[in-house]
Amino acid sequence: MRISIAGDHAGFDLKKHLQDFLTAQGHQVQDLGAYDTNPSDYPDFAVALAQVILNGGCDKAILLCGSGVGASVAANKIPGIRAGLCHDTYSAHQGVEHDDMNMLVLGGRVIGTAMAEELVRAFLAAAYSHEERHVRRLAKIREIEQEYAH
Image (cartoon, rainbow, N blue to C red; front, top):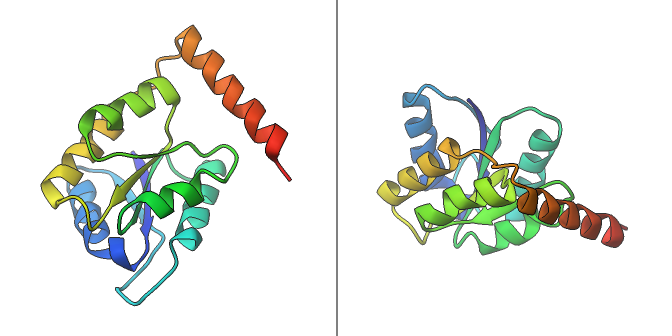
């Protein structure tokens, strides 16, 4: 699977760990930064990652910041991005199955490496269900994006 990953300085250590984890699992990983722990801004990485998703450059994406909250807020401002902040495995797979989540957001200062690996496994293994109720809800989300686009 082609996976793009990015995060600010606060997510750097966990991002590096997940890159190694994903590579060992046989995935192709694209690192969009940050490349060190110098202070950086999570919205920049949310935009970079979203552009890769929207251009078809990856199958799924992972975004990190300290808590995951700011990165999630930033990513979800971009039409077509469905970023889910997940710190439990149920949400990590259910977000894909029901909401067609295309970006997993993690808090590098909130969870440890073992939990992050479990969340990534759940996210990557999940597939959108295409059930009528979920398709209907996604259509409503797209309508909201169009209505509030500027």
